[in-house]
Amino acid sequence: MKPEISIIAPVYNEIDCLDELYRRLRDVMNPSGYSWELILVDDGSRDGSTEKIRELAQNFDHIRPVIFARNFGHQIAVTAGLDYSRGQAVVIIDADLQDPPEVILDLIQKWKEGYQVVYAVREDREGETWFKKTTASLFYRIIYRITDVQIPLDTGDFRLLDRQVVNIMNQMRERHRFLRGMSAWIGFRQIGVKYRRAARYAGETKYPFRKMLKLALNAVTGFSYFPLQLATYLGFISAGVSILAIPVVVILRVTGNQTFLGQATTLISVLFLGGVQLISLGILGEYIGRIYDEVKGRPLYVVSEAPKDHIM
Ligand code: UDP
Ligand code: MG
Image (cartoon, rainbow, N blue to C red; front, side, top):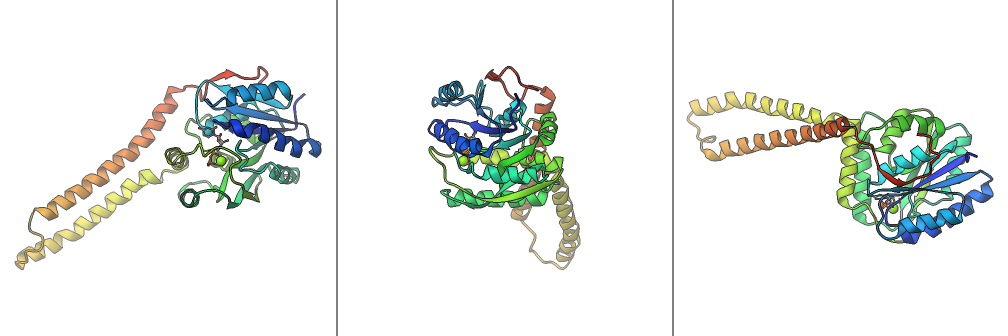
């Protein structure tokens, strides 16, 4: 029988969190009266999480394990969870218990009121570095300004999606995924629920700066052409400056002023323009690389073990 609520938790080297994650979810979900399943997506863990997930799945019927052949990244792990989910509502939650399971009940409540997307808004974050908080906050605000969809501020992937939304999301097979943007793009009735983001239960972050940057680039390129247009703006600005500069230089020469003589001026302007051109090329490259990845049409992920009865 299909459960009413599917909970998806991506797992990458979270062995010390798994027992507690299941226990906390069970304590919230069992008394709620909803039938539920927990989809644990093992994203190529190497710390024994995989065996732990198998063991949990053997002991508890609620658990559906999806095991990747290697590490494919957090957004892809969640995507696989969505593919294998069966519930009428699907909740995405981090395995490290930073998203308190108790908040799920608030999400479900809003869903019952008729909202198809209920996202959890971080009012406060505990146990995270100043650097992480600042970069994250900056990231949300930049994305909000330059993308074409309204992606809510201070919102991670912790959210509830109605089956209708999940089905549409499952048809969006883009490779460089930014799920928050995708769920905002889909539309329907959306609402936020505030919560306090807790500190990690165990272990340390699996999102080093490199991965955060990659996610940010995916968010920007996936939902905006702004970086491509930047080259046009910069081109117009430098063309404008040179047009203004021509009469100035002519007048200075005629009046015998020596200000703009010498190599330094030439060198600086050549280097500046060279820089602008290389940056523009790099931006083009980012988009072209993404087009190339899409054209190859590879599957988004490879599973080594997964439930047989998936719908996709
Ligand atoms: N995660 C994953 N694959 C990765 C990196 C992270 O599945 O390549 C999972 C991780 O196990 C956790 C969630 O994604 O359940 C969020 O990661 P993390 O807590 O490290 O990120 P942070 O909360 O520090 O931003
Ligand atoms: Mg975390």
